[in-house]
Length: 419
Image (cartoon, rainbow, N blue to C red):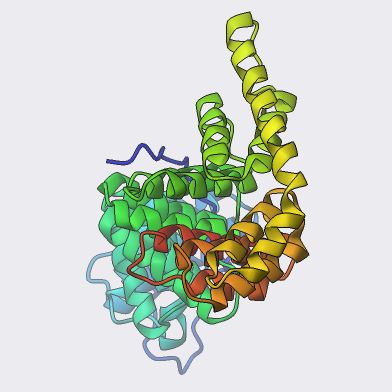
């Protein structure tokens, strides 16, 4: 199981039923002479007094009159509905949403509600139950509303959040993933909060594939270090491709700003020297010392960092001095690996244009030791040059069955993420 930590999920749904005009209009009590059905005098008089009390915001007095109306025997269903209109209005004014939801649910089930009010009040019942933490009922009523309004974002989010709070993480992930997919289809950026719920739901379910997919979307739209750190760690655990692939992951960690462990810095520098890119090793150790990652009060430990830096500098100086000869040798070589190695060396010294030229020449030839690794190097060079489209094309050229495929996908996401 991955060590990806659970992210705190901040629910941001605005429960707006308290401002819904369809619910806060003062109920009418006086019926027209020809109105059908009618309210009897025994029920109508206390309701009229209740209305007068409500106009003065005298809620307790209004409730007393409503109770008088409820005490009338042999009431009609329409009269019961009128009584509930007043009762629901008062309960909402008093912010007693749980009681109000019960009343509006009864009204919706009565068959007396005008057709043009059913939608708004169905939605309000779902919102009120959510407000009162009755999440199962909130889901049920929200789904009723969504049957007529499929794909509505606010109510779909309410369903997903309700599932999450019910600890039904499978349905929470599925429901919120649909919201995310709808936003993407519409060309919009999914809200970070929605992606966090998907991630946290998969985490609770211990679904590593789901966690990985969620993190990929998070780094695409919100490339924060903590998201990158978790995503890279999750993929590194799948790595059985040897030291060069390990170095590849370290390069990505360094690029996104999460190479912050002294052991990782040291290993990356050592692997870089072994891979023939000591300039990269020098840069990593210097950065680690400057940032404090490779800094210790222990003289023995600090001495190791200084010796590693000195070794990297020495080899980098010799390597840089040989670049011109390497370029001549690559031009004469029948196979492409000489150009690939040259391109990787150029890249390690920040000579991006030269790196691109050399790598492209090498990839076009036969005899490249690992074409997929070379494609990733080319993509990194394009990315450093700011040519994101070309970078993505290079990363996507890595074969799907290759050991480099996961790393290439992460680099492609890096090229797709906002600057």
